[in-house]
Every structure is written in C-alpha cells, then in structure tokens.
View 1: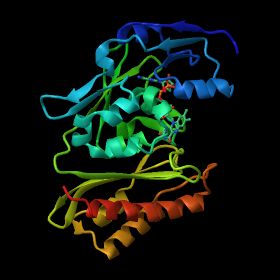
View 2 (view 1 turned 120 degrees about the vertical axis):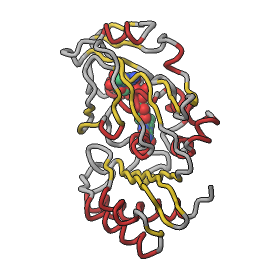
View 3 (view 1 turned 180 degrees about the vertical axis):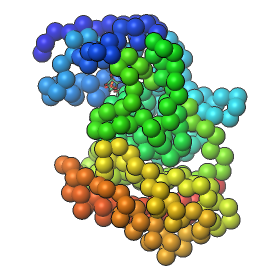
View 4 (view 1 turned 60 degrees about the horizontal axis):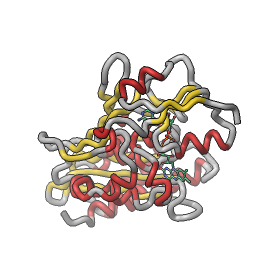
Length: 287
Ligand SMILES: Cc1cc2nc3c(=O)[nH]c(=O)nc-3n(C[C@H](O)[C@H](O)[C@H](O)COP(=O)(O)OP(=O)(O)OC[C@H]3O[C@@H](n4cnc5c(N)ncnc54)[C@H](O)[C@@H]3O)c2cc1C
C-alpha cells in the first residue's frame, strides 16, 4: 500500500480546509467502511485521509427540532439511527431499513454522511431519504447549502457535492400521518446489498392515497422517483387493479441496468413485483 497521511481535524471548518477540490486522492473518512473496501481492492489510493472522528459533537447528534423537523448530524452512525426511539417514532421506515442493511459491525461505524456521499447506487438509505423528502446540509469554504437528497446523486458513484464540501447534517421534514415502507430484494443473504430497494411514503385520506412518493434504488445509476406509477395511485383507493396498474407502470418506465445482482430484464420484473408489495404494505398499515 502506498503511504498516506491521516489528518484529525476537530471541526468541520478545519476539515473542509484540508480538502483540495482539484485532488481526488484527498478524501474525508467517516466510518471508513466504503473507503477501506476501495483501498483493499486497489480501486482507491489516497494521499491524505481526513478523519472526522474528532469532529465537534453536534455532528454525531440527532433530535427533533422546535419546528417539527428531525435533524441527524452527518457523523451519526447507522446504528445510532436504528436505536434512536425518537427517530423511530418520527419516521419508522428508518429503523425498518436499518435492520436489513449490512450487518451490525458495519452499522456500528458507517455514518449517514458516508452513506449519502459514497454514491454507490446499491445503497438502502438514499431511496428512503428521498421518499421522506430529506435535505442534506453541506459545509464548505463558501458556507453551507441545502441539497434535497433527491438531487444529491448525479450518476454512478457521483454526487453533486463539490470536492471541498461535506455533508454536515440531514434534515427530514415533519411526516405527520404519512405512511411509509421500504422493501428490499437481495439475491444472496438477507442482509446483502440490495438487488432492488423500493421506498414508498404517502398520506391516506380515507381509502385514497394522496401525495405518494415512490422511489426505486439499486436498479439504475441513482435512486429513481417513479412519477408514472405515482400518477396511477394518486387520489385513488388501492384496489388490486390499481396496484397491478402501478406495478406495470413502474416496470414499463424505470430503465433498469444490469449488474452482478441481476440482468436488466430481471430487475424490471423485480420493480413490478416489489412496487405491488410496497403498495400492499402501506395499504395494510394501521396508524
Ligand atoms: C460488508 C459491507 C456490507 C454492506 N452492505 C450494505 C447494504 O446492504 N446496504 C447498504 O446500503 N450499504 C451497505 N454497505 C455500504 C455501507 O452502507 C457504506 O459503506 C457506508 O454507508 C459508508 O459510510 P462510511 O461512514 O463508512 O463512509 P466512508 O467509507 O468513511 O466514506 C465513503 C465516501 O463518502 C465520503 N464521505 C464520508 N463522510 C462524508 C461526509 N460527511 N461528507 C462528504 N463526504 C463524506 C468519503 O470521502 C468517501 O468518499 C456495506 C458495506 C460493507 C463494508
């Protein structure tokens, strides 16, 4: 392994100052789970890693804000998110997702900042946060900006973050009576990387589903919000016929790409089946 430097800043501002937007071999390290895999497989050779371990405490804290939104510091681990009862009450889909994500060793160290910035399309959290309409708040030399998670991923392992910008925190708007679910298909072990993930949230008014957000992950380069299927279900009651139509609409309109977990045709079938299952899951939820 080529030698590299490790920096240990104590504030996010100091950390961003150590980044160089022109040099991709300088990266921040949060949990290090993704970076270590890339280094072990010789895909990434850093010259400097900037550890966020000693960063200010607020970066690893979470809680309800006075205005009803929920704030999660960028260094919060996935395990912290899994075990936080306030977050589970605010958005139960997050605990549901964590229990299927990797294993306890990974969740104990991987962070929400790393999970969003890595840009690997085979991640469980990004589609869920898109369906919750979450916002990533960044820290950079020019100050901070708010990026909807729906706009954060630009392509395969690509985000819209600048090279000297970090995710400081994630803010989730109040969900009120919104129902939500995340379903994941794995083709090897249950907690494996997803071959497909479907996140769905929506508000029921009587029998009809309003303001649905249906997001599919792991079948293309970025999470995809499926407008065509949302149009099918919006304002309608979820009868078997409507559910089947929505599954067909999703399958017909999501352009899947093949990977080691399945062919494009297989993934299109998964989209149809799992969209139907997600719709049945929210229809059967009691709140
Ligand atoms: C064995 C194993 C199984 C896994 N299974 C799954 C799975 O089933 N589902 C799933 O979703 N994921 C899975 N993962 C991936 C895991 O979720 C990611 O590795 C993890 O979320 C990355 O977070 P981290 O804090 O470790 O990031 P790091 O490895 O520290 O960083 C990853 C990338 O993000 C950048 N980065 C880190 N923090 C920030 C920040 N705050 N702001 C800006 N950039 C930042 C780094 O520079 C780097 O480029 C698995 C990983 C492993 C090792």
